[in-house]
Image 1: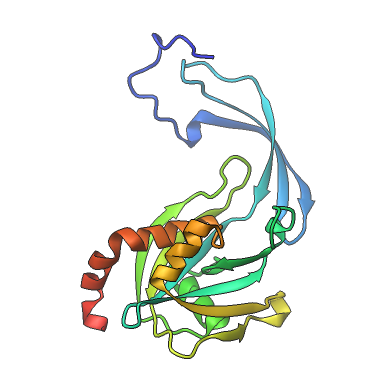
Image 2 (image 1 turned 60 degrees about the vertical axis):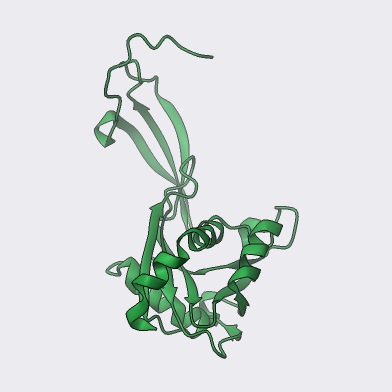
Length: 215
């Protein structure tokens, strides 16, 4: 229902100081954790909300990278099982980007290069930052740093991953146009993959100009 906006301040930009965490406790601790919070926050009209209770899935930061070979005009994609897609209605084996969790002391750029080697045997020659975003802020703390990486895709198809981390990855090398088609058809359905490929579709010429010295 639309509320009266006459009392709204001209600048309604809020920050962390406009949230009061009343209590926080860990509801579950495993590979990830879930925290139970009671909090209140400033309202647009200027008052404070009543205390609200929320569960927060704590994941931290991760890095995703679209490996792109501009010489062959091909992208590298990783197919692997994802538990979050188990009950989605189709196969839980998803076609994704190179990705990994940001460990303490690592930069997103170093994570992109490390994961490219571990997941696909790729050496990254150059990185282009696409953007930083929150994939599911309604209930998760996860943030994503998204890149496009310059690689040589020749001969990298095959099986990869670190067994001690439960990874079983099949690497595919496909044309850029095929990857676009997979976004349209729904075969690529994770947010990072869709965002990165649509970004490449819009910015490829500018990217090639930036990478000219590496080609």
